[in-house]
Every structure is written in C-alpha cells, then in structure tokens.
Image 1 (cartoon, each protein chain N blue to C red):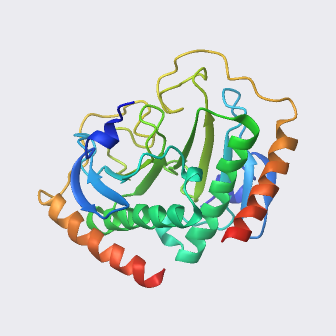
Image 2: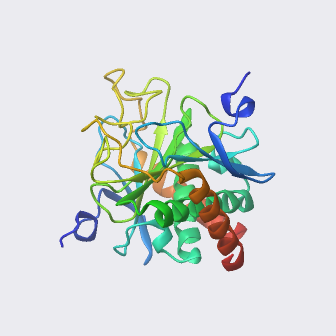
Length: 141
Length: 141
C-alpha cells in the first residue's frame, strides 16, 4: 500500500541520516512545527528494538532543544499519533501563549487567528541548532 | 504556585516508583487512556538529564506495550503537551477505528458517540501487563 511518508519527505528537510529525518512542516499557523520521521515504514514505537527507540527519541529531544534555543517557546508539545499515516513520526511543536490554539492542543479548538512571529531565517537557525544539539546528544549518550 | 499533578495522582494508580507513576485517566470516551506522570515538578523533557529522559520513555513505552497486549488497539497515540498543566506527563492512548474521534486526535473533532468496548477488569489486566512489560524493559535495557 502506498504511504505518504515513504513517498515524500513530509516537509522541508532540515537534517537526516540513514535512520530518520527532521523536517519543518508546512503549517502556516505554526512556523516552527517540526517532524521527526523514521525512514523505515514502522507503525509503533514498540515495533522498534530498544536501541531504535532510544535513537529516535534522541533526535526528537534534539528537535525540542533546538526549538527552545531558537524560538524560546512557552511550552513544547511532543506527539506521535499516526492515525492517518501509520508510519512512525513525531511532532515537535513550539507553543506560545499567543499562538492560534493555546492552551489547547494544535488539533483542538482555535482561539485566535495570528501565528506567533518567527525569525525570517528560521530554517538556517534550526539547522544550526539541530546540528549542535545532536552533537551534544551523541556526547552525553 | 499550586500544581494539579503535584497535588493529585491524576487518575487511578496502576503502577509507581520513586521517579514516576502510571495512572488510568478518568476519560469515559477512552477507558484505556493512560498517563505516565513524573513525580517531580519538571516542565519539559529537555529539562531532565539524558538518564531521566530514558527512564521516563521506558515507562511510557511499557505503557504502550501493555495497552497493545491488553486491548489490541489499531494505533497507539503518545503525547506530552502540558500547556495547561506544565508538569511533565505523557498520554498513552489506545485508538480504535470505531472510537469517538478516529482518525482525528482525541483533542480534535468528535466523529461518533460510543467508546470502543473495554474489558470490565481493565485495571487488573493493565496492572499485570505493565509489570510484565516493565520487567522486560529492565532486562533489555
């Protein structure tokens, strides 16, 4: 069966290795919305061996750290849902008190119309921060 | 400042140690809705050291494995949001094609009115499965 995340990158590529990739989603309400996508077609975290689970979470948490470094959000939201596309991927979403859904989840009822402002060179800043955070994660295990 | 998850268990207690606890949420639409709650008041995953992040995810993924063992969901949803209660906790939600929001996130638009049926002895089954899965996780690191 065809799978969107097997066929497409799923967003603007910020980082990748042979195991997974980090993309910035095309979500106008949330310019800093990142996705960490496993390259292989696997459905659930518990379908991965423990080493794979840890490797994927290292990248998810490097994405969270990069978002905090670059955007200073009021909160970070992490989620792996996959009801529509059952190919393992994580959402890492910087949340701000003045963003369109706060304090609701981004999938909940909208509260206001304008996204929280983001730096114009967001991709470059996030790429640099991701590299730094992933290097740090490799050092500290 | 007072914090709901410092003051209360946050659901029916299924398992705990000195680091975190697993509770079953009081969510009539989702009888298998589990929460893994850090005991300490910490806001973000990246506020924990790497060892703490790994320890918490081991319990979150044991909760996922227990839900799969007991309820055979079509998908598991994992999320750490905390916009309303910024005390680190994870939602582990078994999803079924006929559940109230599928394929939407449980925070999205409702699609139907009846929850997917759950075993009557759900707490006992989940407690036993959690113990098994956590013992297995300790063995495989």
